[in-house]
Image (cartoon, rainbow, N blue to C red; front, side, top):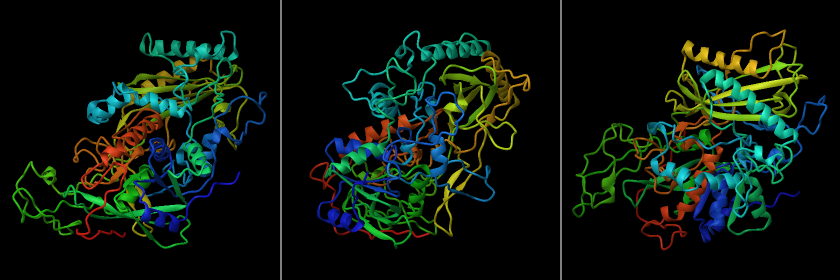
Amino acid sequence: MAFPRTSTLSEVQLAHASNPFPYIIIGSGMGGGTLARRLIQNGHRVLLIEKGGLDYSTHVLNTSRPHFDHESKDPSTPARDNEVVFQQTRKPWAVKQGSTPSEFGGGAINALGGRSLMWSLETPEINLKETPANMSFPKSVVKYLTREEGYEKALRLMANSPPSDPFYPNTQVEMASADSPDRTSVDDAKTRLKHALDRYCGAHEPPFLIMNGAEYSTQKELYYFPQGAYSTVDYLLDRLHAKDEKLTVLANYEVTSFATERATWPRHMFAIQNILLRRADGLSGTEELPTQGAAVILCAGTVDSAAIALRSGLNKLQFELDRPSGPPGHHSGTSSGPNPSGSSSTLPPHDSSDPSSDLPYHYPDRRPGRLIGKGLTDHEIWSTRFWNPDHISQLPVELSTRDIKINGHNSLLTICTQAESFYQHGFATGDAEPLVKKGNTLNVMLEFETKLDESSSVTIDPLTSEPLLDLHRKLLDGSEAFQDDLRLLAKLLYDSFDMPDPKNAKPPQPVLGQFGFVAHEVGTMRMGEKPEQGVVDENLKVHFMNNLFVCDLSVFPFSPMANPSLTLAALAIRLGDRLPSLMAVPGRKRPDQPYQPPSQGTPAVHYVH
């Protein structure tokens, strides 16, 4: 299939000069692609800038993909091979020397659709009732997700389920007939899991969920989804093929940084004046795209969004206001950028009639962007695998249940039978190479909710200007009691699923997963109601910028237990509905018309590293 033509940079510049795009989105993954879709469906024009091209025209699980279990007696057995494709496709980031760990397991997916092309199809709601308020989302966001159908809207989207369809259930047991192999396998796995958990923590009543990431077919096999797995590239390609004038895509261009200026309204803020970008293959110099007052939304991911902001010097901008020289209640700004000396000008008295009086004067170093890049966090994942050559379940079954406490810490427990065929990871046996072994492998995984790790951050390599990760991972609980609980739960599951192998009388101890290996890193542009609490506010607008927003995992103020994709999609839908009103400021005739700043004003501030 021919790739529908995207625009060249010169075409984008000409179009933007004659009829400015009101919304410029950087990145097309789960955040950016979902946001673009919502804005287009709401009738708005969007310019989407993507560093990559068309690597995949849909989610990889909808396509032919590698199966290395060639000895399986049942070649139709479902397998989730997205991990294989992710490892072959990802672009790893450099890690600073002296970091612990010394490697980062994730990486960027530079392609139209981004990480949405190969997510695992497992993305539950965050149990926000159990999340401590001091590390959760702002109250208005929690309300939207849980009480204003935010999660339901996102789940319908990611299940490719139109609003007219009945809302499919969280667990798929009722979707299989009573005598089907699927139903038998599910019931057997549930019984064994409940038996182990009853012995571990008493009578266990929370539901056991088959993770809902795609709409499964009814009365048929589990893990077969006729609607296909969701990715943002499907809709984007559909609009490009249809030559929809509301979508313009600039592919294979990398945004490197922004040029900023002192905003004319509100006067204590800054604005993005120009977007600096270049061809992703490095065969061109840096060029500029004026924003023309458009809303700019960073959706490049936790690492790259922070890197763009750092290269732009947003972490160095300072509030510098002199005493008022004009009418009472008004004061003029004289500095448009950072003050290298660290000195501060005399502050005017607070005046509630002036928007500039909202300036947070209490900042010790007067840098509102000081949290940019900091707090790089990935949730802790502890896992183990058991193998029994004689016990073969009928079909792979993956079940999850949350609120399993390990030394007092809540976790999401996920077990998978026939994991060697379903996950397609192979099995480390001590042989020369990992093998897919005949029999049954039980995979056990525990994921923990954690606070942002303030000791880890995204920095910029001074030699290459590329992201450089400074990692200093801190364990959630380093106590022996924590390890004892892990061992006990593993042993109970080992026994309940009839896994004991005469050659391996003891179950393997759960081990800590590699930092970043599931690509759920968060926190570098965190959300906070007040500027001193985060980089973006509850509407995902950067606190000190009047036209810059962020919509990717970097805005999460904590690391949730499990895949955060559903929550990110819900946040993108919310932002798509709110952006027009958020950008409706004095000087704008209608919400979808770019704001044209007056010609006077301070010059743009460029930062080159």
